[in-house]
Image (tube, rainbow, N blue to C red; front, side, top):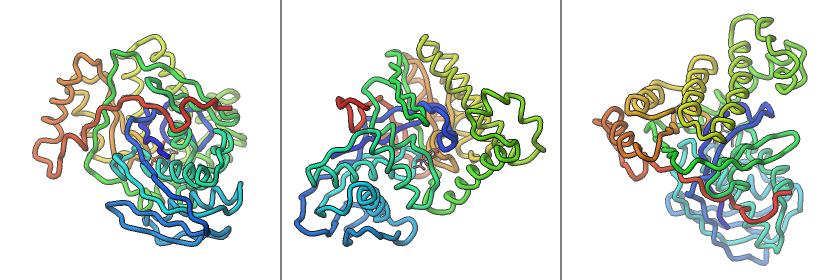
Length: 365
Ligand code: NG1
């Protein structure tokens, strides 16, 4: 079984408030090769991280924070919660996704391992069933995230961005214009989401929820439709900033879909730059390295650039016309990476080619 990573094009830190986001799956993935066992042990080996082994039961607890075994346990727990404890497996995990880079490598592992556990037992789950268990499964690792990564990894279609709506769950595939090119550029600053950044991430979510509660609103969907000027009723501070980021980012997602549909590269790029500014100034999830990287991309002729994923390090996503992709690449290498230790162009400056999701070809209902 396999599941791809994703890059989020726009719609950052709003999926956990139930608002639509626009990621696309990458053609890089986590692969799980396995043999079914006839007992309940789960064994997995991954070249850089070594082997892990545990007994599958209904009451699996997390191991040390940051250990990759937690994702295996999260998958086993997600499956057990809905389908019960099944036969275990011996697995080998391979990945060409850089870890802790904002490309959802951990969600890809969770998705691929969950699908492997099900398939090993002769089962197959629908998109909806998987989306009932996977985002909550990831919360087992400590991040109260949303469902964007799992939805993108499961439901994307080759050549398309994936508009994911929540409550009710729906997916719309938006063809990426063939003369657009997305690049994912690593800031070389690690965003270790299972470590310190986890607390920061969860705080952003809490501030957004607190703002809603203070305004007496039930959801951000209500905030957008019923109370567009509600921010004025909040005192200056993190709650108002969170509210302003969330509501403005939701509007940018809709505008970005329209820009993509009419092939308006400059318009889409402008929305990306506005998204980055909001993440930097209101939500404060950027960092100097990501800000420099976005500036370097724009100075190199990109149409747009922004941090992608949770932030606090990780990657930026850059948009340009195919025709000037080589020039933008060269410019970023010169303006950002020159003199930075550890830069490896093949790993850190990736062409984001929209690939298929793990369920590609299977009806999503
Ligand atoms: P990353 O850290 O890039 O995997 C996280 C969340 C997303 C979303 C983004 C911010 C998980 C698994 N992923 O993504 O749901 O909230 O941050 O937009 O928690």
